[in-house]
Amino acid sequence: MSASDLGWFTHDRFGLFIHWGLYSLAARHEWVMSRERIPVEEYEKYADVFEPDLYDPREWAAQAKDAGMRYVVITTKHHEGFALWDSKLTDYTVVRRTPWGRDLIRSFVDAVREAGLKVGFYHSLLDWHHPDFTIDGFHPRRDDPDAREQNAHRDMARYRAYLHGQVRELLTGYGRIDYLFYDFSYAGDDHHAVWGPKGADDWGSEELLRLTRELQPGIIVNDRLNIPGDFVTPEQYQPAKPMERDGERVPWEACQTLNGSWGYDRDNHDDKSVELLVRMLVDGVSKDGNLLLNVGPTGRGAFDPRAEAALAGIGEWMRLHSRSIYGAGASTFAPPSDVRYTQRGDRLYVHVFAWPFGHLHLPGLAGKVRYAQLLHDASEIRRREIDPRLEAYTVGLGGMPPGTLTLELPVQRPDVAVPVIELFLEDDAAAREDGGLPRAPLPARP
Image (tube, rainbow, N blue to C red):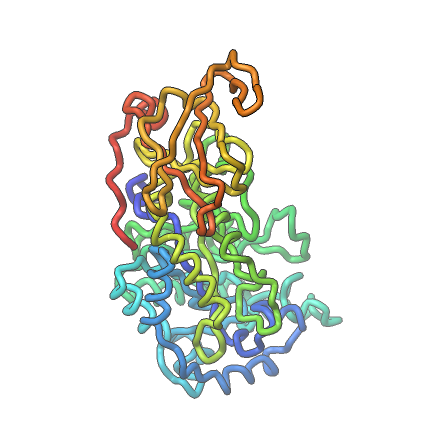
């Protein structure tokens, strides 16, 4: 895959993840079938009553766009095995098994495309419903006394054919698909020691990735097939630095939740604040990464009020600050503590996580900045370079280390989730820091 195929991904930086399925009715985590060891025949009751009458994918797309997101990724099938499209390979689908009886993926794709956003699919490699998917340490039947004996009647080769067949349906029935998130492999995983782990051989990963690219040229694919993909996917944590493979930087995307659960979890109120979510987005971009932020719709197909409020809050910040995100990435300038830098051409963005009193001292930037302003209102920030030989005296600041640029800040912190100062770099400084790349144009409004 050429680097240009990832151009939109590394430019847009921010996407919406949507986890939706039968587990949304249980409303107690998307792994409820596994956590509670629910048998297939008992779990199927959710299909009998799944009727998402509030589902409006245009509203979903509008909320994503208003939040400043540029792509939307939906679960076509999660580990529970239930298909949100009209799969011809099983009756366990929204079309054939539920009172709703309509393809949810079709209207989703149409709405996201109509909104001008990129379309992404999530597809689980696991399937706890399929009779040939062998029982392992994650499977709901793992604690059955005869669990291993049950595997004698299961055939992963048949399941593999089913898996590949469903992927073929998804990648041929809905027009262009920009992004595919496979989930997940656990062979050789140091973090999840389970019996019977599955990986590339179980999924037929080489063949599956080849099929994916043949059906959707230009699609980008994650790294969870147990073979290298186009980008890596840290989950529920923020990397400490730009991510690498074999010593080389790689594109990456942190997938994060609003409250620790991917699916709708009614009684979970461990919500992240808007400020924290914005800081996570900024932190990722400052390390050349993306953020894929998840919402789990209710069983009726609506975003719950807390999720809507979070998206609206992020959207208000993005409305004023998106040019520090779109097309931006890591800078080689070193920020002080409690600050994150992103850079786009000759613009260096100073994201201030902890607002100081009076002054902000930026090492290595003396003589390299021609103008400074608060980004949210374009109000000028005065700047100084204090002679390192000066000693502090009464109302006079002492000298800073050589090369330090001092910004004079208002006492009152700007009333935004994360204040941002936009620095206009001198042409030679910008060229040195970005490898001589031309200045990037201002991004289009979200």
